[in-house]
Image (cartoon, rainbow, N blue to C red; front, side, top):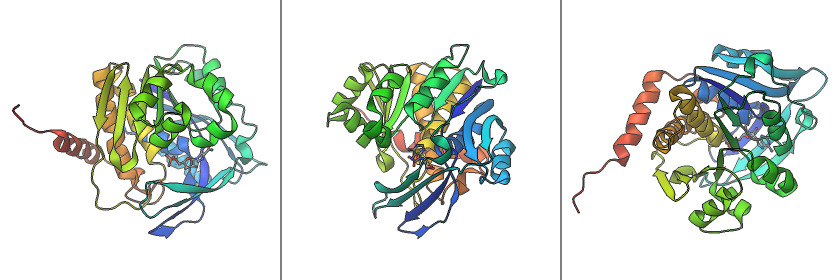
Length: 306
Ligand code: AMP
């Protein structure tokens, strides 16, 4: 099935306890598109970059089979730039710089060939742009998933609530779930968030796994204990790409299949953190992905008599 991905395509500068990068390719849509390209039959990208964005990085996306007809290049403007610094435990980070640049007046256009996309992943972007994409799709997609972050909760809460009300799945982290709901306990937070519109909610907890909620049902997927964690940047987006990519590949949106999708998302994210930026996820084999998924199955299984 085909998947439409929107979000930032950006330059990032990252600092972790293991090192520092200058401007490297990043952005929510970059991670989502790369990650989902290993699973979905077709990935269509809607995003915007400035004239400073390297052509070889656009080619990198194309080499992964990503359709870039919907990627606008504004020659006279600068690409979105984000910079972040991780704390020692790498579970939390501070945003140092957010320069919207080309994103400030982004008016997304959906090429005719994308109009029949079956699945939509609204990656991190201003909520009114996310909503415009939903409104500009002539055919109703089978499933719309959305990511967001505290930045938008702080500066565009009303817009955010309107967009959240239009999506099927919301994917956020634990801190964001608490801020969005005003509740501390994640189960209570989840119940409240699901009254805002989404039927499904995923709460990511970094190295502590991810929770999937639907009504009263809850599923927990652990994170794999990894030997090398260098840079968590993009792990959330890579998770989202693996999750929605698997749903698009299997075309099954039952709760049981969503559990498998969460495992695929977690497996893809586990690769992402092993190297800086997109380095680890640009060159994966199906074999590596399948082996990693199997490791998740193995650590979750136990025989027990009660
Ligand atoms: P993650 O680590 O999964 O939360 O995603 C990090 C990516 O999100 C980076 O590559 C950034 O370029 C991108 N990003 C950070 N802040 C924003 C924002 N306000 N809007 C859109 N993308 C953002």
